Amino acid sequence: MRGRNHGMTLIELMIVVAILTIVLGILFVLGDNLQQSVAAQEARVTTQDDVRMAMQRIMLELRQSARASIPWNTLPNAVITYRRAEDVDGNGTAVDVGGFLELGAQRTIQRDTNDANGDGRTTTQLVMIEGNQVTVLANGLLENEDANADGILSAGEDSNNNGVLERGVWFEPVGAGLRITLQAQRSPGPRSQVVTSQLTEIVVPRN
Ligand SMILES: [Ca+2]
Ligand SMILES: [Ca+2]
Ligand SMILES: [Ca+2]
Ligand SMILES: [Ca+2]
Image (cartoon, rainbow, N blue to C red):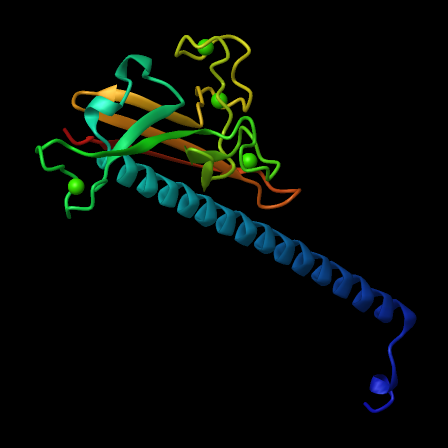
């Protein structure tokens, strides 16, 4: 018996090496797939968080905005301007001594097309602008595919080939409120598909 176990023949060695190579190859592919799906999952969660946080901020803003300060005739649109109820005279409420609602400076929520904050991000960035103060609300906004602005998916507009008209950001009057849609995307890595996240909420401005 000792003689038989003394060593492997070349053939046996080659078989062992071949099997090991196959096993390692399988493990590598499995590990790589796992890594990619973890990266995709992380990107999905991150972009969902980003969109949710941006939406919460926008809802807070518009819920505090005065209905009369919103130019309703410009909606639906990817841009919205408004003025929030604020305690301008410092008497403790957003109402002045005459009983009138006090309004803060005009704010605008829009894509940062002209890169107002100078960070190099333009149409994919959603910002809130008040005077020369720029606050970033979200990055990775989907582009507005509605090139001819007719509200439907026209020929040649479906740039991401999913059969749906994307707008990235959209403010739309519904009843007494505003429907807000946000769509953002994030790339998990060079070999993975981009993940997109969308959220729609309705908010009612104050009277
Ligand atoms: Ca006041
Ligand atoms: Ca920018
Ligand atoms: Ca269109
Ligand atoms: Ca599309």
